[in-house]
Image 1 (tube, one colour):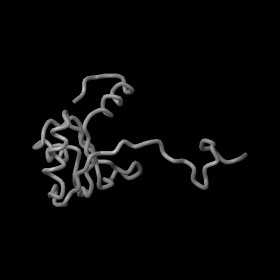
Image 2 (cartoon, helix red, strand yellow; image 1 turned 120 degrees about the horizontal axis):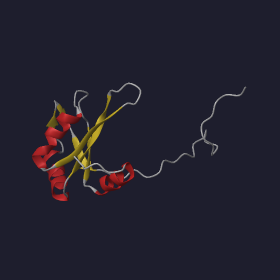
Image 3 (cartoon, one colour; image 1 turned 120 degrees about the vertical axis):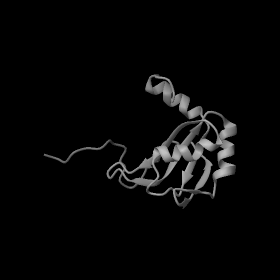
Image 4 (cartoon, one colour; image 1 turned 90 degrees about the horizontal axis):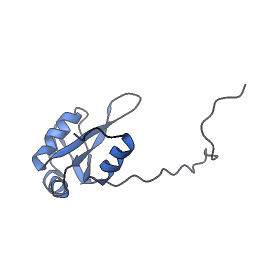
Length: 117
């Protein structure tokens, strides 16, 4: 685990770490089982199964961060299209998520709001 640092600094450090996207996860996969599955490739700094914020159930994908690029590359080569918790997984370099495009038909450039009075 990373040492205690302010959240802003911790986020900056995490963004620089080699990270993989893992798709096709079993609904039964946990953060711990994801970590254990990827530790064979090198030092895992962080493993997270993404969950639905309303139900808490897995969304079927997650991310694993490694201590070095070689471990990250090893995970992609070794574990992509392999089985984890009974499901064949996809492993690829994670893409940095840019700013969300909020220019949909319901976006008027304003924040959320309540109803009128």
